[in-house]
Length: 294
Image (cartoon, rainbow, N blue to C red; front, side, top):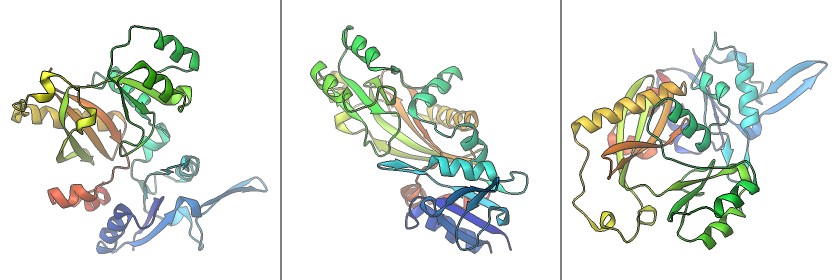
């Protein structure tokens, strides 16, 4: 019987539960371990990783590391230590190569890599010190802007800024190298797309929140905007597959917006531990099983 390990922040989340469910259907023995349960140590010059209950990394054939970050803290160091200890020739680790190559893959790193690869990404600016931000505030500012954290999910770190005063107050709450400023994109709809095992699983359409749209413009009030056609949708699939390959992803979710002015796509974010609860419910795709097959 094959053994499968799921590493997660919260055992009761939908995704680890679904992965465990599908794994057991395949006859696997499944363990779900919280990052907070893992202990690391060095004793007599020997490195040890204690998963608890006598579990050993070498026993697993398949390891699925979910997100190691949560509000107020991160366990990425534990996740990285585990992946460094796994013998990749004996065990399959979903996104193992990607996590080892990019332990942290924030919006800044993603944007730079996507641009270098010629893939569409949102323009941004960031600085390594408060001095850089003070200089930026003296330039010819073109409001509105989107200010967001280097990391964050569900829009928690995303703010729409309309004035210089708002920008000055907001920047005080971020460390210098963990915030980026972007123009507000002319986007009315965006898509959550999933790629797994080099295969495009599909997309789920969303409407852009009103607060992130450009205010008081013809673009905002014009309801007869162009919907992407079949050629555009084929292009969406191509750029998603290319982005997944760029970051060595066995599985990832991509948020991709439709630019109303240029009639083209722009990648908002690539998420290597994307949630898929609503994707499964709305599309009927068995994402959990697809992940187990990579």
